[in-house]
Every structure is written in structure tokens, then in C-alpha cells.
Length: 302
Image (cartoon, rainbow, N blue to C red; front, side):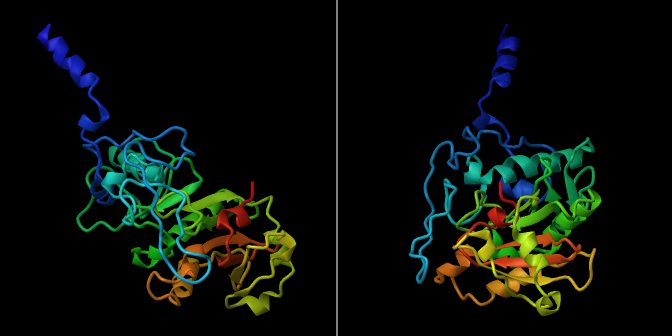
């Protein structure tokens, strides 16, 4: 009877008593001997935490008015998806989605996740490079590096890797005319781990606008007139690929754009997003979003 009591106690052990994967475990791509966190608030759209849940205001000057309050609450602010935030929906893609992808890779089991570079079966290799990963849902891309968002993209091992993987995925689905990529700004994102939306672009009016532009004038990034979208808070600068049917580097444009901001005081940087989309002639456009609209709402409206 004592034996069965011990077994039963193990089976019903609370989540906090399990060997939960830490943020460091995920970043090291070694989660084979731990359990991916699963204690998140319901519904998933509630951007709060189980347990301590607080806003993380960002104090800045100029326009828009300070402070900016990101949508997702955390248990511990300003460091992204560190372990104290493992029960927050704002870190779900890091602690749940990405963690489960890495577990599947390490176990050699079937998964819809895609990693670049590939994450092999078994323990990580010494000095293994970080990977960008298409998550199992197929509509989000993140990295195994702990990076809160677009403002920290320059710290990525491969700044273009996420958008390159996204374009490779779109190409493999032969969907250049119907899918786009979007990275939201600090003020509009719902997760505090950097991620790219791979989303349906068939309802956007942006393609019609790009079709009418003189591509020769957009070999370097220039403002795009967005009046036809009827979104007065939207603004973006774009450049086009030199040839049709080819991919474009987006990461470098983001990093170059953000280099104009020095320190956290300028509020404008918290509204910077980005996106990649293809026009009707199969030319690829890399765009930096600079207005108050979420990039996702421009490239992939519902």
C-alpha cells in the first residue's frame, strides 16, 4: 500500500514540483531531461501570468506620450522570457511552443517544427549555433536565442535568419502570392520573445499599392504612400528585390533603421515593426513599419 501511495503522489505531483525546463535549458537547446512548462492562463488571449502579473511600462520622451505599456504582463519585467516568466502567456512561445519543438528534435520524433540550422537528435553539439525555428503551428517563427523583440535583433547570431527561414517556408509551399511575414513593434506585440508571423496576405491592400510603385525608385528604402489603406496611423519605408522570384534580406534593414536611435529615451523606436511581402509581379519587398499600426495588421489583416 505504501508503494502505491508513493506512485500516486508522483503522478499527481504539482507542476511546481516537476523538473521544469528553464530559460537557460531552452537557450542551450537541451530539454530532453526536463518538462516544458504548461501552467499558463486561460484563455491564451489573456496576456497575463499565473501568479504575480504586472505591467511593464517603458518610460521615454517625445511622441507618443510616455510611458508605453506593452500588451503582455510579466512576473519580472525588462528581461524577456527569463525563467520567472514561465507562467506568463507573453512567454508561451518560448516556454511551451519552442521548448516542445526542441524536445521533438532531440528525441528524433515526428514534428512539424522546422529549424535552421537543423537541431539534431540527442544532446546539442559543442558550440552549436542558435537556430531559427518555425513552430509547430506553422505560423510563427522564433529563435533559440533569448531575445525579447525587434529592438534586440542586432544581438541575434544571424539577423537575417528568421526572415530567410520564413521566405524559404513560403517558397516551399509555393505561396509567395498569398503569404507574408510580419514582426510587430514593442508597443503592439503580444509575446516578449522575438517572433515573426507567417500569415495570410490575401486580404491586404498593400500589394495593390506596391504594384503601382516604380520599382527603380525603390532599390533603396523609401517611404510608401499608404493613403489607400485608410489607416491614418500607418507609415512604412520599403525597398524591393533587384529581380523577381528572389528573396530579400530584412534583418539588415531593421538594424540599420534602429541605429538612428540612441538609448531608450526616444519613444519612436517602440513603434518600429517590419514585414516582407511579394507584389503581383513576384518582386519581394522589405518594409520597415514606422507608424502606430501593428505590422501584422498591415501585411496580414483579418
